Length: 90
Image (tube, rainbow, N blue to C red; front, side, top):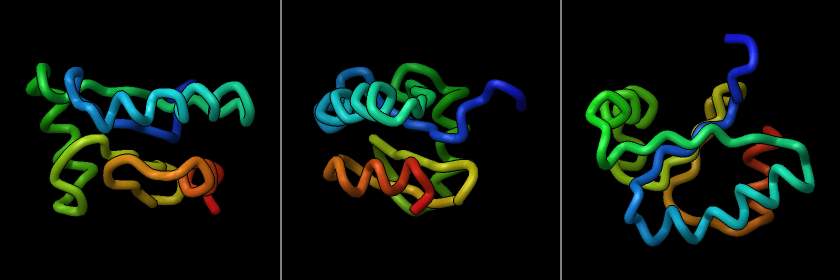
């Protein structure tokens, strides 16, 4: 879809680990110009179903980051270096 980000984060509003990743998401946008589409799943059943389609048993929780271009994912919080490499498809 045009204008759709290839980077997705599935998160829960009250999720501590999701909140830990917010500064890295902002840093990715400011330093690399890459936007992560954030999709809340704890309070939205339709979004939770979408998470299951992408997750396919890899993670089973949030945050779950998925790169549509590469098919690579990250489960939980991670370092800046790993996060940026994932986002850039490395």
